[in-house]
Image (cartoon, rainbow over all chains, first blue to last red; front, top):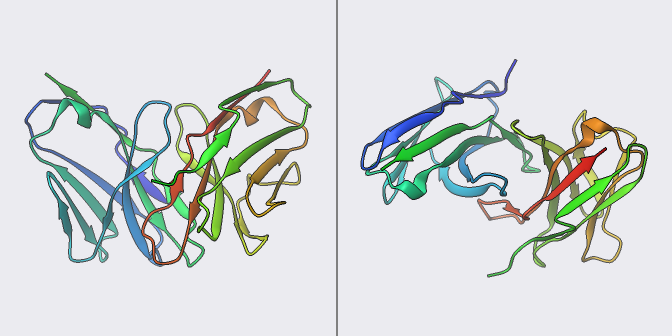
Length: 110
Length: 113
């Protein structure tokens, strides 16, 4: 059973479009939630934390639905530089052990 | 901006050999982690380390693996007898309480032949 599940994609999206990714997690005790971005053969980098009330950072909006154990990421006005793999990540405990989804690959086309 | 560093960037070794992967975390971090990512697969937790001891480890982190922080600066991952399936990117990360983010190093690509 996958603990964090994502659609692997790839999502091929024209520049300027809006794209949404979803993620589900299996452990209801999960404490905190994140979207990381990973470029090819590079380390993951935090894109944004996901709060219960939802949060927005520029063109990026993240939502959390604890009842459905579901996290989403919306990217508006997509840029070529948004092309990457987006990783849904949950933290289970106070030691901050991160559990990772396999990632959704996004390709923005000019 | 402080950053996590890892050496070497790429390590090639023969099956059965020991390897040591090195990391220098950010100085004020208290929790340290090793993750691995096999090519094309997801990032997997290996071990967390706090207060000079392992706090949690995954099923992957068997007797062939060990970690230590010998001098309060370097944080190392040792694989005693490498297998072909140990070939992966190994990422070191650090965190401190109050932070949202774990800070990752650039990774060491381990190739076992």
